[in-house]
Length: 266
Image (cartoon, rainbow, N blue to C red; front, side, top):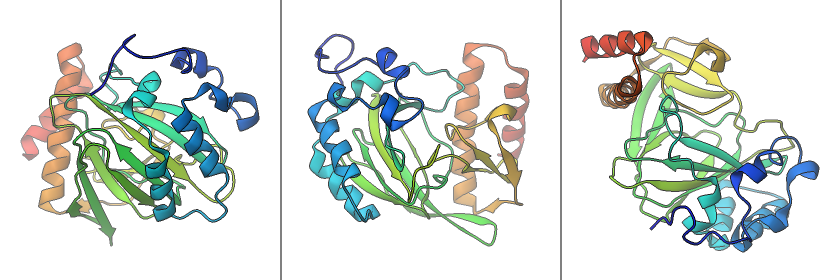
């Protein structure tokens, strides 16, 4: 169960505001390992010392680090802007790997996406998340399997993974994400693909893999994208839900027009 506010956050854990200025540039300038909880320190040191990382090995390392949801609470962002499909915070940048925390309020769902330059990684989810894995061949996107998370479950990530996850429960939860590649990169998950089935195009972004990205967060578009009926219906349902949430907060002509397009399709 998540403990909020001052329930149990002690001085050993630095707050996100203090971390913010230290989590932007390089490992030398911002990664003060002693400020993290013991389990996060264990994960960081293990990742630094792996000579030949593989997705399954990283999954084992994350599991063995014994990280709890409470360890991640300094990076919780359940009150993220409604335009963001979920909360997203950087915990540690190791040059060739990064550790992130995602916050899933009830109803939050990512877009269908991959992970940019990521070659290996793992995701540990602390709630009962919906999770779908997709296959993309010959410009056609299909649902490969439903691989839902149970609380505490860890799954590996490889370069080929295209997936979507979200929170269809009534309780918020966090997830821990480790992404890595060969050699240091400015943004390991940068230029990630978002499969937009309303546009029927692939969008590329360096930020969160959100529905309905503004133009200034889309690097480029490619392809003529198609999908099977199951995948299309799920995409449109999740996108429509996000648009309705945006409209509940304030009038938005673009969101109204886009939602009307979805309604006509469905």
